[in-house]
Image: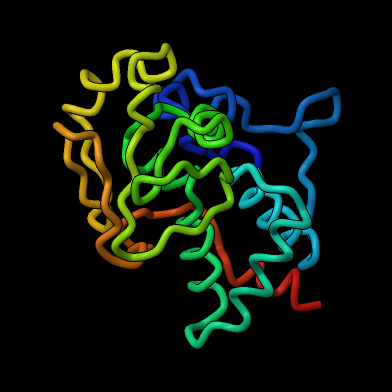
Length: 194
């Protein structure tokens, strides 16, 4: 977990990211080499996924159970479910520069899905859904500078972005190879499969 970068905001894309500066654990004995058990590796991988998607343990278990019931392999299904969360889609669409900011905007009712207000960050979007900012909220501070930042932003191919109308349409399932997520979802599945 130490030394790994997560793109939670713009700062983590630069060399100033706190996660990339420290290569060892904090403290006097941080430089000591630690050998992890299989359980330890699985636990750290699960914690990384929880941290990246801003989830609690109960939510992760729920998503794992959902992924188990799907026809495709559980690791890919879990990754696709997590990518389809509304707070993550709003971040991937480029409306906000960080995941916590995107989550707050969703929970405060600043985001519409198919012209209806949705205030649950855990809402799972489907193919064909159109995500847009609440028209009343555009003038508020949370969306300040959105037109400037979105001009140069390029979303993943599974999200079609209309930069003039500020609308994001889900055109396909999330393509995991394109996102290059730094996780081994098979370890997460093994952790919950115990």
